[in-house]
Image (tube, rainbow, N blue to C red; front, side, top):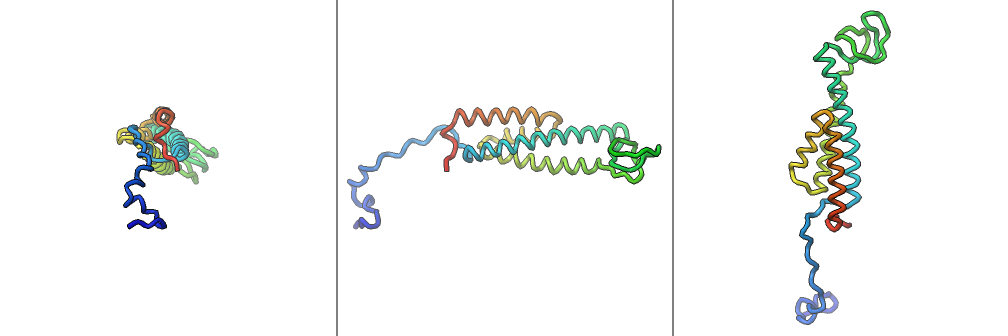
Amino acid sequence: MSDSRTGDAHLTDPAATDDIPPAPPRPKQRRFGGTGAQIQGSLNFYKAFAFITGIMLLILVAKMTMDYGFGYELYAGGTTAAGAENTLGFHPKDSVVDGTGISYWIAVIHGWIYVIYIIAGFRLWYLMNWKVGRLVTIVLGGVVPFLSFVVERKIAREVRVDMESNPEAVRRY
């Protein structure tokens, strides 16, 4: 029994199914995990933190080279052993009085920025629906000095090419 008020006439009336066109074929290409705006926003966030992470990594490498290679630490403020006022500079360890050693804070800040970089890379990877190898490349980009700049350029180019070559794969909602 069909009831025209509920709209389920197509369930019992075989003539009603002739009016419905067939479903369009599903695209054979992959699907992105988000809208174009989401992907673009994620790419911009990733690019910003790739740059910041690269700069912080270079500062960290300079700090570690001075610290472990030459026995110098980065101090802010205080007075040097020679009696000169120190604003910011590398000096032998424990040679600055009333100064703050900021080498430790460089490492901590770099660590937290790297965590944000990984989150940004993960989000972009997820939205682009890439394979795991691409995520590993993104993660390693923040570990090797100068590599974050190279990886960022490569990833940004791939996102643009993927989105331009697969416009029907972008979600629309």
